[in-house]
Length: 461
Image 1 (cartoon, rainbow, N blue to C red):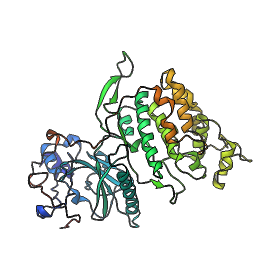
Image 2 (image 1 turned 120 degrees about the horizontal axis):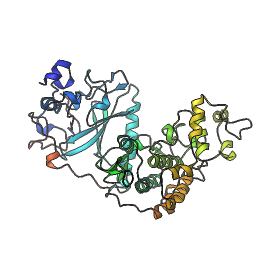
Image 3 (image 1 turned 135 degrees about the vertical axis):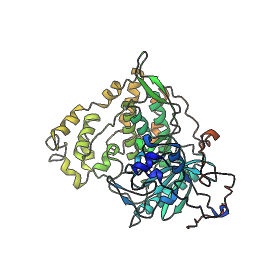
Image 4 (image 1 turned 180 degrees about the vertical axis):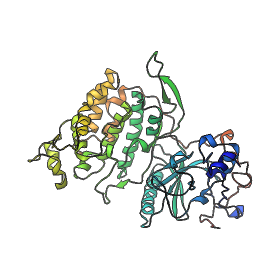
């Protein structure tokens, strides 16, 4: 036992029993996934003994009910009472609907990403998870080779009342890459490649009658997190990270909606929300195009285009970047949105309707779309075509907004030299040297892992 762990009551000093310790190997379900966790204690307390003990932590820690922590309501998987920061766990990511874990698939003998949906007394999370599985299975059936950059669902199962979905293990999100890169923007050729792939994914979804509704950098994953460090400019000593592969994948279809089904009133994350959603005009496929336009600007500049949390301020920021809202669009807004405009409703009620002076200053700081592109260092030969593409994606009227299929044929993608991305195929299994070692007996893959694939229901002991 680690001395530091014993002194400070670290969770790593506990002996976590594997889920299927008393179950014969022939009866172990094929999805008995072993979570990879190098240390549940702080990095300064980690030791070989701690890592050996933590390697034995499995899905058996996932209790039916969540536990209350100081920050949020989170499931107790990999969260003993001493652990207060879920984001600090290696191979673990938290979200509104649950956790995503880096796990070892004992049947395929490779790492996978498992999304474990939290429980709710009214079963609303499980219902949303079943709708997401329906969408993912439809996309997998229509695109078995995953050539349209939509994440591929490998399998799904139930575990102690929790819906679990297994995906290919991919790299970090574009937002995380930006954050770890001190928010240095991507090169214009990488932004063009990201945009082309995302437009291809969007075109594929829209052709099937599916609206993603939650496009944001957090929901776009790199194929591989590896990178090189290069100077920001010739002769500069400032280094920036450049990903090895520009291939990206669109994930998180939990909010995806079929166009012919019920549409909720509010969709999309605030910074990427289309004007028709704010004005209550009804939304459809064009709201995804608006979100992607905001994302491309963020990747080009390193910061979100509309950093706001209020509807009126958001609309004022749109006018500062794109121009005034057309009267025809204002006329189509609902009764609730009329309060954002002067009477008669032809102009935005700004700045007299602002909530604070800071809000007015934040709007004044914004520049027009053309100036934003030029200040981002885009070469003059590409600046005009890129500005035209972004302006077409950020039109107020969703009926006049460019479609994903039309955007793919835009001149900007023909003018910029795009490096071919890595082929969007299933990620290969890690080399033998990278596969986890399990020094504790019975805690990992071994020669006895011959599993019965006919069993899909776990045996709870």
